[in-house]
Image (tube, rainbow, N blue to C red; front, top):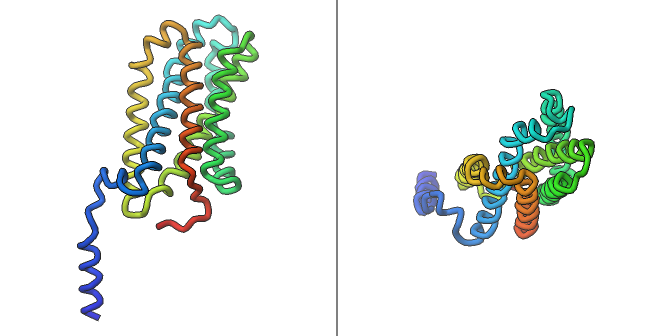
Length: 213
């Protein structure tokens, strides 16, 4: 019994420490880089829209869009997106659900740019809000399952750091684009979300029903 315990201790001691750089080694390198890029792209797009949206709506001149009631409605539209993501990750899979919501987010941004009336703008914004929270929900389900148990906290910590970085970049680095044209900024977010969807597809890994390692 003592010999078995000693052997177990030796095996544990032989394992290298799980530092942040470990997630970028071996077979983990590609999925780690892709999922962290997705967190950054989604964060920049999400905060880019919702940090600047209230002031931009106030200047649009479309009656009900300028009211606080519409902002509350936008927030409420996020709830069914999150609920559908919770259903989708178990029914359709983590990766497929994330791709669907990211694609829907890109489409809703494109619809906003193309909208020619207040009603279409409102519909695009509601769809955008719905899609963004669905994407977040799928991301939170998919990301930790990409990493093995001993690196899961490290991977999620890095993902959270990318989200914070995106939150910092959205109101600062993109300010010049927003001030020139909010529509151009939304078009940029459509491109970023489309690239995030492609990055998710490139991960080529589905974790639904797969035992955690």
